[in-house]
Image 1 (cartoon, rainbow, N blue to C red):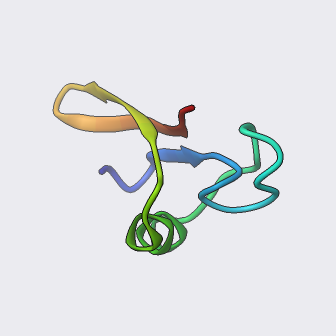
Image 2 (image 1 turned 60 degrees about the vertical axis):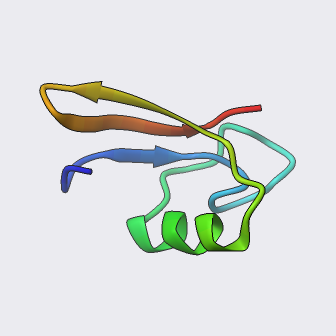
Image 3 (image 1 turned 180 degrees about the vertical axis):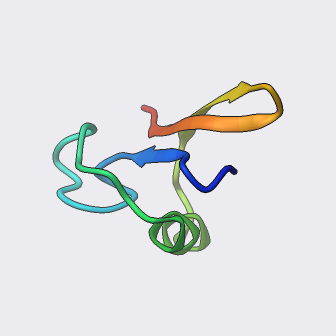
Amino acid sequence: MAVDTEIIGGDICGDPETSEAGKCTPDELDAAAESGNLNVEVTIKEGSAEPVRQSS
């Protein structure tokens, strides 16, 4: 993940009732991943993750 990678999603940070929560931090992504049951969509561009978004 690049320093400027966008991390977005309600189950990652913010309100889990919406999949379009505000931007999250890498630490919030790590914590959500450790808790399990997290599905994300990652776009790779030139070897770096561009957006990381919650997926259904």
